[in-house]
Image (cartoon, rainbow, N blue to C red; front, side):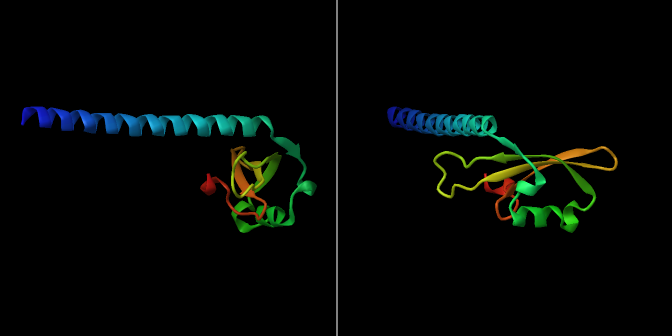
Length: 113
């Protein structure tokens, strides 16, 4: 009976270790993908943005913010949707800065990652 209990505990421990290792590998792969994507980003002007992104930046949500710089991030390699993302750095009158990610349709792209 003790052998069965010890064997069950060992199998459970190995299963947990395998799940943790898989999660860690997935996180490392995601970080590497983000680094590659950041290395390929291209600075663009407001005029080069797709119309839906321009409309989103003019919305009430960002009315108190001024665009500082814009980067076009290529689609993530191997992604099924292949969506281009725009990283927009903005500043307000108080000097606070922030960045947002918008897809080609002007939607929040930070929720899709």
